[in-house]
Structures are given as C-alpha cells and as structure tokens.
Length: 204
Ligand code: GAR
Image 1: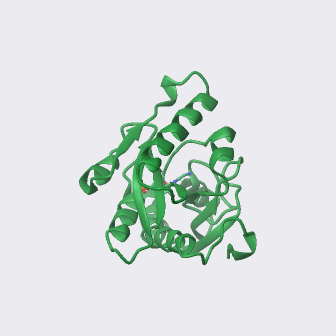
Image 2 (image 1 turned 90 degrees about the vertical axis):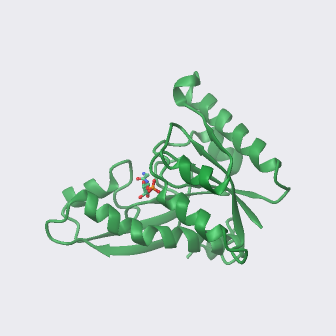
C-alpha cells in the first residue's frame, strides 16, 4: 500500500478526489497526512476523513531551507507512525516552490499537478497565462518534481480545448474536472508499479 503525504494551499478538490479514491479498499494508496503552508480551507477534507493535518508556515522559518526541513520532518513523523512502506509526496495545489533540500530528501518520490500542458505555462498563474497567450488548447500535467519550477519529467497529461471568450475561472474549473481523475489514475499507476519513479522509461 502506497502512503501519500498530500500538500495543499487552497480548496483541496484534488485532495478530496484522492481521499474519495482511497476510501475504496481496492485503491492501492492511502492518504496518511495532509500538510499546508497556510490555513488552507481544503484541510477540512482531511479532517472529515480523519486524516492528520499539519501547517508549516514559511514565515515561522528563518530560511526557505529551514521551512523545507520542517515540512519534511512533519511528513516523516506522520508517515513513520503508519508503517514502513515508501511515501509519495503529492503536491496538489501547493502554491510554493519546494526548496532543493526538500526535493533531495524525497526525490524521485514526489509529484506535482499543474494546470497547463508543461513545458508551456509553468508558474503560479498557468491558466491566466494560457489565456493571455491566446492558447487554443491547454490542459493539465502530473509530473515528478525536480529543483526547477514545474520543470520535472512529465508522467501524464490531459488536454482541454479553450472556448472563445472563456474566463480564467471557467477554464480552470474545466481543467480541474480532468485533473482530479488524472491525479487519481497517476497515483494508482505509481502504486501498482505501472510507473516506476526510478525508471523514466515507464513515465509515459
Ligand atoms: C489545481 O488546479 C492545481 O493544478 C493548481 O492549483 C489548483 C488547486 O486546486 N496548482 C498550481 O497552479 C501550482 N502551480 P485544488 O485546491 O482545488 O486541488
């Protein structure tokens, strides 16, 4: 059984989808803890499912590296309490760049979901940037996190056609409708060995 530590900053609809999938005994992963950098409203989904949560605020750490160390310690503390299986860190709407020390500590067992077809439109405003660029197609990418900003190897993507005159909110909502099942399926593929994170030839 793959253990998931999910990191969020916002509403947590992707977290909610993972929790719903993991409620099925046939799903090969469980959410063992949910962390945030802030009082994210999405933490309520973890509370409702009885999953432990923690908040590690960057403002409480002297440096980004210290913040990353504190975050890693919380993940280890919560995951070791469950059993010895490996942990997968899932950044599902965490709106912070994870510092290099954190990435080194978990690599390659950490993934991110991003609302664009990477390498197009990395960063915090992917949907807005795609609209501003006049893109007719965008989508969602689940990728391994490396030390860059949304630069890690792609595991899975799904495409969305942009509708003429569509707002950022509407487009992001349509992307998220594909994103939730894509994330759930990608985590399943990692858990059942279809994707071996140590072997990039299995990535897509
Ligand atoms: C998701 O669309 C995710 O891809 C995006 O934030 C949203 C969080 O939604 N992440 C980024 O933009 C990171 N650069 P959720 O809180 O409802 O899961």
